[in-house]
Image 1 (spheres, rainbow, N blue to C red):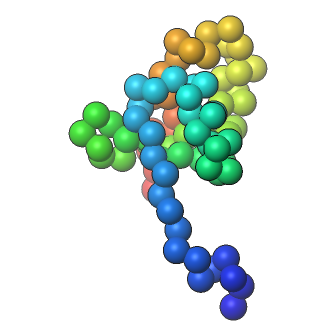
Image 2 (image 1 turned 180 degrees about the vertical axis):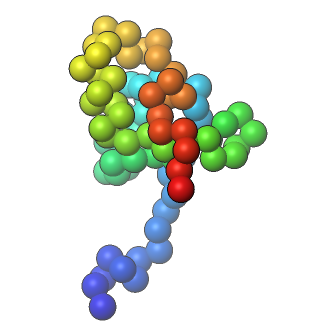
Length: 78
């Protein structure tokens, strides 16, 4: 069996009101490509991926500090 298949997974989340820059820094520090987004009550609100951030940067590069994650995240996860 593959070694990575036996490692326990860590779920890393972020509040939906944080900005894009904070999320990108957290993803880099944790060496991950997505974050579970939580609402103010700690419930899962969506998923934020590298692609979500890249699309936002391409569309609004000067406004990143003012854009909450909730505006660009994928709100429905199956």
